[in-house]
Image (cartoon, rainbow, N blue to C red):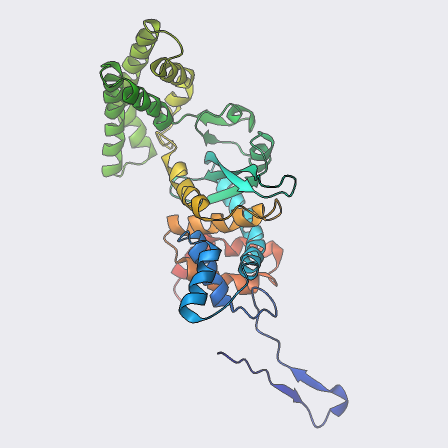
Length: 366
């Protein structure tokens, strides 16, 4: 057990002034019996290691004889999430300043109290830079209103999976498609018709353009040189691939898996070709999808989000956890230096506390 002693002192010459007590150390949850280290550990185990709170409570009881209410730990985690909401807003500003955003969304069950025995189908939108900042945005529905608010004012590149509302999310943006989503349709078509030679042929053509991307990564090419390589090697393959898809589609009946894959690919073609016009663009949205996987894994283990009000707090935590993972930041060290002081931190200086700013500060010589 740790005991914190706070001295109370007074001056014998100024008895009327009374005594002065040292201020209490800042805490994530003021006056809580849970230490900051304990709250951070529970948070990290849930969102980084995907261990739900009820299992952590069971482990504490079985291995350490500590009985904690299942309401106590979620309340502490949400208190930390509330503190991180301004940080995630500052991360959003950093993200949109980069002028290249990848977007994706996934379902997230949420309790509302409106129906007994059924959870509301909410959504967690994810916006990120490839290899950089990740920001999650909780929304109760999948309409374009939520992502439009998030992307308000952005001018640049927006890459997604072809969601119908993508082209309504921001004026002045260039919309890029995802080669992986297009390719996936032909993989599924090949599984349903393993003797059909067309899906393997189409997939072999996709493999050619992905081989060019692999060569660019291995050579660590910048945007300009990567674009030159794509125009020299990928453009002819893409031109031939489009012609082949048109020919295949003309000779098969509509409604089948292969026809659907062709229709989707040809409908996305203008967006797919954007990566042949801008070397900054990735060929697909896989960076974004990779950042979604921890939420998908956690969704299988966690209980539903307890209320619509808790959603933004969970999104803020997920934003920090995934960004720290991408930037190779020790999550517990970052939260330890940040969370206890956030309650008293000036809101106009929150930009100094984002993971990117924190990492830069740690790299400066003392």
